[in-house]
Image (tube, rainbow, N blue to C red; front, side, top):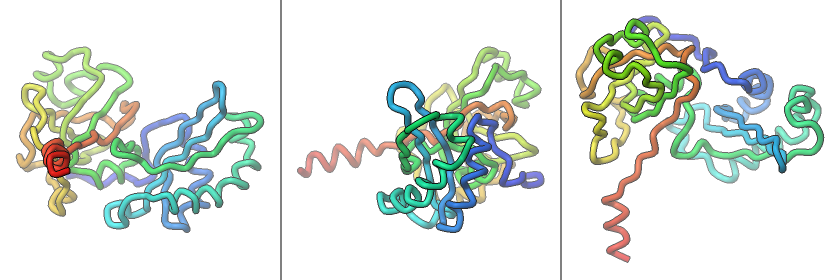
Length: 222
């Protein structure tokens, strides 16, 4: 699979510096900051999304987790000039769980969620050489959004398996222990392979998975 990338490497987002500055207050509590949103029009809001440091085994983020982090950050953030420059004056702090469309930012994220369905946006259309699939690029020369199964990391690139004929699996895919060890050389995920350079990704998220069959069955039982 090639040498692993540094866990500190992430998609270049405007608020990366702020994440780095406040993470030392949150990490000792067992949490990581995965995304920050700043709402500066009308009501000013600083929205911070958190996950467990070991998100794969610690369960979902709950209200108690958000309250704990909010208490730690509330006073500290008011004293930071970086926050004041983003949100001058009074603002509201919101700490939230990642949700079903969890953002993927770091190399560690792309390793941990291998085998999951993801949606990736890039800053500009990519060349055939960049995605390492010239035939696919020729058929999709202007594509900036990719939907597929995350295969893993290889030499600073995100390897994605695009669904054949743009058709996703009919049933939602559940992550298994084997998913975390997906090999780039296997054909366990059907589809066309593309490799997307991490620095060219503007946004990446897990694709929400809904079990419509289970929901329909439950509604009938009620």
